[in-house]
Length: 81
Image 1 (cartoon, helix red, strand yellow):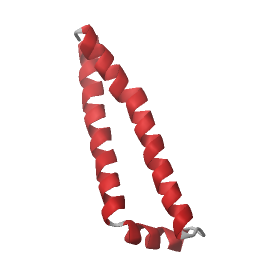
Image 2: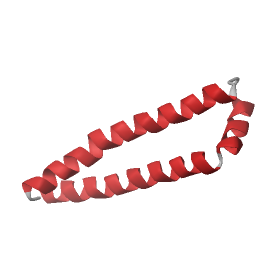
Image 3: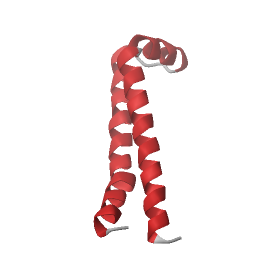
């Protein structure tokens, strides 16, 4: 795999991960009550704890995406690949 191919792969992975992050964020903003009601049936957590879990997931996913996809992609683009 060449550096150009790796750059292209990281670019597509970045796009897909950011699209997923945006989609999940919008769904949690627009359908918060539905998400809480659905997950309360499966897990023994109150609404406040579930919302904290949702936001913890979003923050961890964002950090992982930025660290493993966006930063390497930008570094390779700056290097000219």
